[in-house]
Length: 329
Image 1 (cartoon, one colour):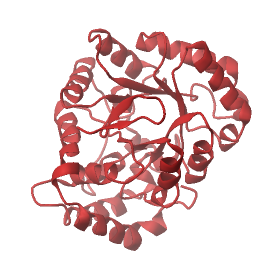
Image 2 (cartoon, one colour):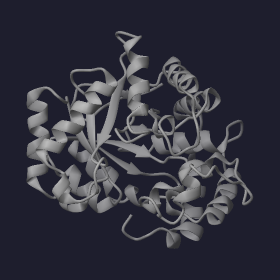
Image 3 (cartoon, rainbow, N blue to C red):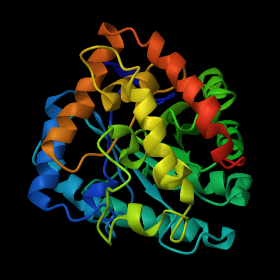
Image 4 (cartoon, one colour):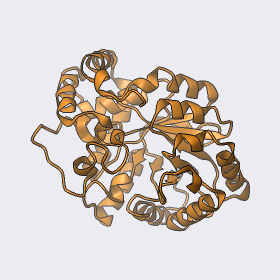
């Protein structure tokens, strides 16, 4: 597993990390036993980055991670959490007092004095453009409550605004074969600034697993049922904003171009991780099999030629997906 620099922090994180939204909520039920097995399997395969948030299961994801790591002193795992969605996504709620309360809650959930990395959780653009936001985050660093901070964003414009901030460690953004816009400006800008990029929703909420058909259904408490049109939060977080049937057809065409001996999800994760400027890809996993498969994709970075797959990604995007992606993403 490749380990890559986490911005200017002096830390390194794995090229394939683990997203843990599914260990909290919104992806169907996952027992704590299964969640712990996912974490353990990921670590066994070289994963050194867990990404979570204070609202995943109202803190359940953070707490499971905290208990898991407490039993493994000297674990070497970087935990990146997120804050800012415990209240309405309105600029007036992004105050120093709320930042303090949210980070204190995450510190308790994770069982640590200092949080490794805290990311603003897809805040409004006005928050990213406000100097006071970053003054408050700098104060948390100075106080030892957090070691570093970043921003999770919905749009490329927000990503560029965050990258321009001198103390931002990382930007987290949706990036996958269905969402190529970050290639144009965001990844080059981040590389030039020494800002890490975490690529989230890398398998387009499972569309790029190659396992779904037009007849696939999901549980009622799964966001892939209730947020397909942005009913609960930004539509881009579900299937990368692509219509389900359109995504199924596009995934089938990409599957035809995967290198021999590999799979569509493995090729996809490796392709994302291979893009200059990407620090870590953070797929989720609900079970051990998925965790093993995700981590194993890292081996393709050294062993498999992804040139033909790269051509297919751009061809399918230009032909089938570009018009389907909202311009602001």
